[in-house]
Image (cartoon, helix red, strand yellow):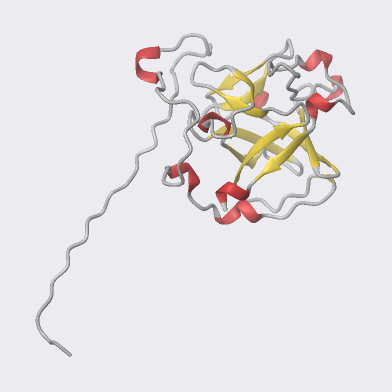
Length: 202
């Protein structure tokens, strides 16, 4: 065996994830020069959003949500064959591109049993519903419009607006990928049923 002095050097690097947010209350008022994203369909396991989340394997129960709270990451795939996505300009819609980073969501506690907030990991915007039933990206983490009631139906999950609970308005994605107005949603529709996909975050 050879002996001798050896030296090694290590370098540390970190990936800075930029939050594409705006100071404006309206999602349309966006400085697009700062928020323009130049990729589509990125597929690389080296991207920071593929990092493991210890809470991604949290177990859930059927019926009313009883999530043991820690944040966890996923994609929400609807029965209409689209992934829920939230874009820097505040647009919320569906896409069939499984590798679109705007579909990477993190669910957080919403302040009570069965209540959740859905945040886009790339934009840091929250899925919200306004008084017209429109879905949009909200940057205020304290807004009541971003809180949803999470319920389980078999393998699928629904998200009903807490603010408009009595109206039974749900997050929904139509067959063409556009969001479905909360006013037109109702229990049992394919548009409101989502399958959580966590595998790529494990």
